[in-house]
Length: 116
Image 1 (tube, rainbow, N blue to C red):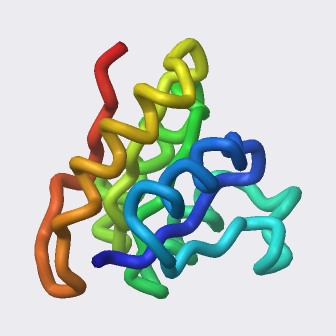
Image 2: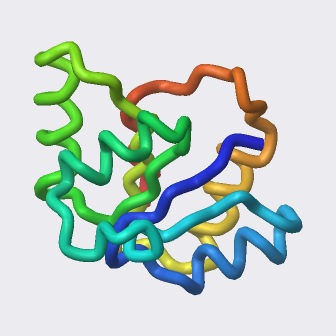
């Protein structure tokens, strides 16, 4: 299973639900890496360098920042955007399906927006 990096304000209830659904996960929060106040570009760079899928709710700034990195030719992680309006249960269900079967070497799209 691919390791995860949660953005600064990612809902911890979703992470706890994923652990219940999938068992132990390799997940780290941006704030635990000293990135609590870091710009999106730095969070995405860290995710790419560490080979982690980045989970975020930030629909306004994260996707444009990801695409800027792509345009510059910078490394990018897979960014999974979870709508804030999505229920915790539905988010857990969709994320578990998406990441539950991914292996370390498996390629995912650069940007995945979970549907409401």
